[in-house]
Image (cartoon, rainbow, N blue to C red):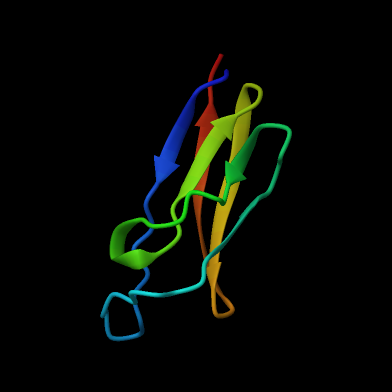
Length: 79
């Protein structure tokens, strides 16, 4: 369960142009399953990458928010 993986978001504006200096905030629906370390910085297109760490077996949703817009991905942690 103690596995981890880096998430590299690509943040785009409404016409699909990558935003180089977007301010990104991470959150997790169930932090008993996984957490995101937001301190990695850098990443593709200058956006803030996150290190997702599994804490226990289960499923949760990881959210990335920029300027009031949020997208998500499902994370499955297996034993």
